[in-house]
Image (cartoon, rainbow, N blue to C red; front, side, top):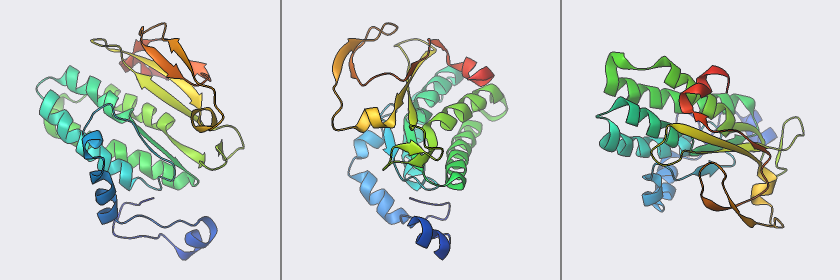
Length: 220
């Protein structure tokens, strides 16, 4: 887990005692991510931090992906925005504490928005930023990765986001965290009816229709 000051490893002794909250130093974050360096630089490579704190692991993954995003797509805003959605939708986090979850979402959005504005100056699209905020609200969630439940005792739900090739529509499928990671899960082959992809998936908790990714800013 991590917090804004990546060199500070605790917020308070009370939180350490009650929740075992000890943050990972920036040095260790980078050393671990360097072990999977190629994946951190692939825009659609998914990362899940099951005890994300305020997000130092996810922040560093995002920073690395943003370098690649800028190199490949900064000459065209529509393409940059589309693949920016791919980047943000690839980051997942779970934490017990609501304030950590909120801070993690805020940090990721702030880092992306700063880079976005530095590239496109006064042409930035506020609706696009709302899309990223919505995706983060579904990907960074409050709960216990060990019990696989949220703080209300309901199953933890995570969303998978995918875009068909050469398309601005996005597909969202929701899965329970337990179904994804249960060792007794029976996996089976299926064909996605919208994308035509041959995939192996757990049971789908909820299947959303394909829609233009910008529509996520309207009502999710």
